[in-house]
Amino acid sequence: MAYKHLFFDLDHTLWDFEINTKETLQDLFEINALKERGIDDFEKFFSSYSYHNHLLWDKYTKGLIRQDELRWKRMWLALLDFKIADEVLSKDLSVQYLDILPTKKNLFPYTFEILDYLKGKGYIMHLITNGFESVQHNKLRHSKLTDYFVEVITSEASNSLKPNKEIFEFALQKAGANIQESIMIGDNLDADIQGGINAGLDTIFVNHLQAKPHIHATYVIHHLKELENIL
Image (tube, rainbow, N blue to C red):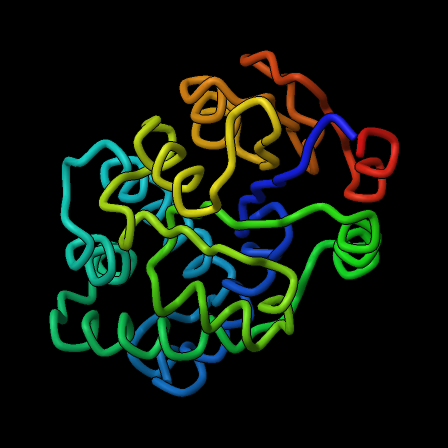
């Protein structure tokens, strides 16, 4: 067995962030009666939130904004698109979002099966995620993934972010693993694959969206089941 330690990304790789976010925002839309506040189309609200969230996460990963700014300003900017300038509502929505989101349980197809397969083969599995500490652990607990992973390394706990090599070095140290026996598995070319490369790790690009890779991973798969062909 060439590898001993497997380092997974969580969001968009195992945990279906897009579906879970949409379900959460639908809950917020109804709980807060946003239609009565002037947002008549949920799909437009979801699209607006997703747009601003993507841009703010990019700024956050580059160290340009703080965590608290990311959390409420994505709501603030989405509401502004509907001419709602309400900072209190934005911050309330931010708190509710982070309360509800981790309770969602949608995973990519074959997640449990592949984790059981890998565990059965003796691999030691860990997570490296740019998500927030409490939120990510709650996601794992609610979706029944906690027991599969020995170490869960978040950007918040490690004081670094993918693709910086420091978060990977921190993860390797916590796991008691060396580079030669470890591999990074994730969906994000810039964060997971380039980050793994920066740290000297082999990588597996989980190309759920059939994207055209601009960074060369060691392996490319399009479905989690294909990990059986590599590991």
